[in-house]
Amino acid sequence: MIVTKNLNFSYGKGTSFSFPDVVVSSGESLLITGGSGRGKTTLLHLLGGLLRPQAGAVIIEQTNIAELSEKKLDHFRGQHIGLVLQQAYFVASLNVLENVVLASWLATGKQARDKAKQLLQQLDLQDHLHKQLSQLSTGQQQRVSIARALINEPKLLLADEPTSSLDDENAHRVADMLSQLAKQYGTALVIVTHDQRLKDTFPNQISL
Amino acid sequence: MITRIAWKNIWFKPLNTALSIILLTASVAIITLLILLQEQFEKQFDSNIDNIDLVLGAQGSPLQLILSAVYQVDAPTGNIDYTEAKTWMKHRFVQTAVPLAFGDNYKGFRIVGTTPNYLTVYGKGIKEGRSFLKNFEVVVGSAIAAKMNLKIGDKFFGSHGDAAQGELHEDHEYIVTGIATPTGKVADNLILCTIPSVWAMHEEEGHEHAEAEEHSHEHHEEAITEQGKEITAVLIKFRSKMGIIMWPRLIAQNTKMQAASPAIEINRLFSLFGVGLQALQYLAYGIMFISGISIFIALYNTLKERKYEFALLRVNGASRLQLLWLVLIESLLLCITGFIFGTVVGRVALTFISCSSESEFKMSFNPLEFVWQKEGYLFGLTIFVGILAAVIPAVKAYSLNISKTLANA
Image 1: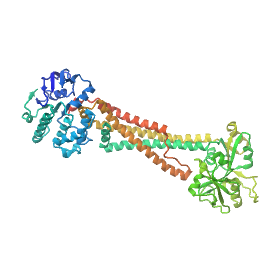
Image 2: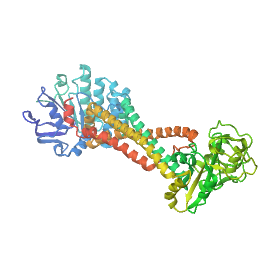
Image 3: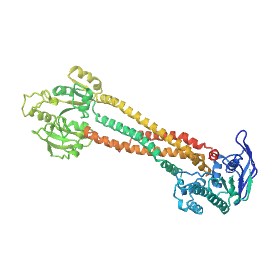
Image 4: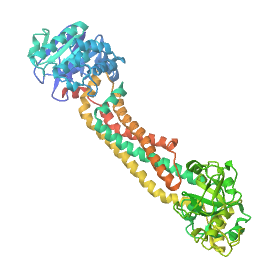
C-alpha cells in the first residue's frame, strides 16, 4: 500500500511540480498518464525514492521514505520497491538468471536462485536462463526486468513506460503479466505512461 | 558477490583487461627480477669476500685482481715472486695468508694451486676423502664433482690456461683425493691442488705463459724449490685492521706488487652496475605508471556505458559504498593478477639468467628465493597503483545521481 500527501518537487527555477495525492492498495494497480513534461517520471522517481520531494510525504506500508537516510533508503528500495523502466538495463557481464538473483542478493543478502527460476518460467523465459542479456529481444529483456523487480516480492512495483518500446503484441503481453503478477504477489502497481494501449488493461487511472 | 561481479566484469572486456595485466606483469616482472638479482648477486659477492681483507697480486687493475683471485671470473693481472710474497705473508699484522697459483683448467673449471688452508678459511672443509698433500693430488669442489661426476680416485688431465680448449698436459694426471663440502661460494667450482703441482706441470713442459712468464728454465730437478718461483696472488686476512689501511700504500711503495681491497673494488663494481640497474628500475616504474593509467582509462571509459548499470544496482538496493567497492575491487583484481603473473615471470626470467650465468661465470641464482621485505613493498606499490587508478571512477560511481541517469535514459 502506498499513499502520498501533497507532493512537491522542483528542478530549480521555473519547473516545479505539485502532484495530486496517490493511494494504491496492495494488489491494486494505478495508471498515471500525461503528456511529456508533466512530471510523470519525476513522480515515479519520487515514489521510488530515487528523488526526494521538496515537500510532502511518500508513505509505503507506514514508512515515510522521504525521511529515510540515504543508506536506509537504498536498503528499503531494494527490499520493498520494484522498478521496471522503459529501457531495460542489466549488468552486462552477468547472464539472465544471475541478473535476477543479484537483485535478491542486494536486497536481502541471500541468493534466491529457485525463486528466480520460477519467476522467469512464469514470464516464459525458462529457455534463456543462461544467455547474455544482449542476446534477448527487447520484449524478452523487459520481461527479465519484471522478474528482477518482483524477485523480492516488493510492496510497490513501479513501471516507467514499460511498454513504449514494444510492439502491440509484446506490449499487451507485458501489461497482462504486470497486472497478473501484481495481483499474485499482493503488490501495489503504479505505471506511468503515455502509451494509449494500456488504458484498457488498467481501469484505475490518473491524468497529470 | 560483489567480487564475483567484479571478476565477471573484468573478463567481459578481455582486451582491456589483457592490456592492463600485461603492462602490470611486465613491470612487476622486471622489478622482481631486479630485486632478486641484486639481492643474490650482492650476497654472493659479499659472501665470497668473507675472511679476505686484502688481495696481494701483480700490479694492474685492482678490480681485475679481485675478480680473478677472489671470484675466479677474470684473467689474473700477472705473477708475483713467491719469496717476496712470503716475507709479507709472515708480517705481524697478518692472521691468515693463502697463496694462489693459477695454471690449468679441467673442462673449464680452474685448477688452483694453493695450501690446504684455502679449504678451511674459504671453504667448509672436506666432505669426502682427504685434502691434497702430494703434488697432483686434487680436491674438487662439490659442484664440479656433481657435474663432472668425479669420485675419489678418479684421474684426469688438465688443459692449459683458462680455456677448456687449451692444450692438454698429458705428462701428469691429477688424482682426486677429496671432495670439498658445498659452500655456495666460488670454492664449489674450483679444483684445488698444491702450488708445486702447478709449477711442476709447467716446468717440465717448458711452457711460456701468463701464469709463469718469467720461469727460470734452468732447473729441471725433480725436487721443486721455491726459489725464484712465482704465484698469482695471496688472499690475506689481517689480525689488526690497521693493515687494511696501511698495506696498499706500503706494498705500492716497497714492492712491484699491489694490494687491493675486495670490499672497495666490489663497491666500485656495484656502483657501476648500479647506474644500469637504476635505469632499469626507473623503466619498470614507468611501465607500472602506464599500467595504472591504462587501468584508469579502462575503468573511466566503461563508466559511461556502465552508469545505467550502476543506477540499476542502486535501484535494486545496492548502497553507494557497494558501488565504490565494485570499481575498487575490479582494479585490485587486475593488480593482484598482474602481480602474481609478474612474480612468476620474473622468476622464470631469473631461471634463464641463472642457466647462462652458470655456464659462463659459474654463478647461479635461486629463482625460488623470496625477498619478503622488498617484494612486499612491491606488492604494496602495485595495490597503491590499483587504488589510485580506481579512485576517480569509484568516486564517480559513488556519487552517481540515479534519478538523473535513469530519467535521461
